Image (cartoon, rainbow, N blue to C red):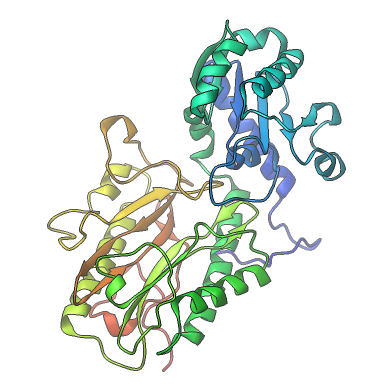
Length: 407
């Protein structure tokens, strides 16, 4: 786990954001060279941030046209943004001549105007192989008209090759996001008692995130209790939690574009769970740690996946056990569920996974658990918050936190 504070200091090296920006951009350029792409058109805000550090407000849905990047082969990023003046004042690593007004790519006319600006900046490269990371139906029709000599390819795949291995500073940001998320969990637990509403508890956690500098959260976040844990409901409501209810908490803070994301299940109140509830939680817990145990160099993402939704290893999953990679997008490759041969990859150092098995039965309860784990010579679990010991019979060797609390 991270040993550092959040702020910059002169007496030790912490996150070096300038280095992180440089290394991310260089990895993207290297991926372009390897793929033979002449230019990348980047519209997804998380990819814009990866290439430049540009930050805007995050919406609950994809918003085309807040910003765009064109990265020409052998050149520097060119940024179009609704926040041009802000960027000119606060992003000195982007050359002023490479910052333009908002790309209004929601209409055919706006796309034509943007395309002329692009051609003016990258010249003959606009007639080559162009990777695009995100397309609306309109853009899929308009871009070939605006760039008739270009060959369009999957730019998301090019960026995936750059993003799939995290740098030292990206890993540190990810660990800090986890620390903030842990603080949100602790605030949640301090307020978990019969009569508290799911939404009230989420508000407490989110407040702690924001107090510690979180930019946003990895989704609307989930507090789910009682009968809503099985069948599992993936959102928070105004339900008042009762004594003895199971409560699933799936939350995550954001630190400089990197997303904390982990899950625990708790018993509300000072009561003992039933044998059936312990059995189901233990099933999910064992599946989680057995999957994490595969996250080391020499294995593949398929080795991790074999533990999720496996009818013998995880018989009460109901198809809900899942996982994914994470980075500037909280859900990105490498994948670990619904694998097909072309997405099976060997594990490499500093790949990052979020693994989240589930086990549940209506009338008994649902149990979702999640770790984030970094691939190395051995798995490095960066979400060490302990589990509810009332729901465990056996502690897994990879779990270094549960069983250490003083009662």
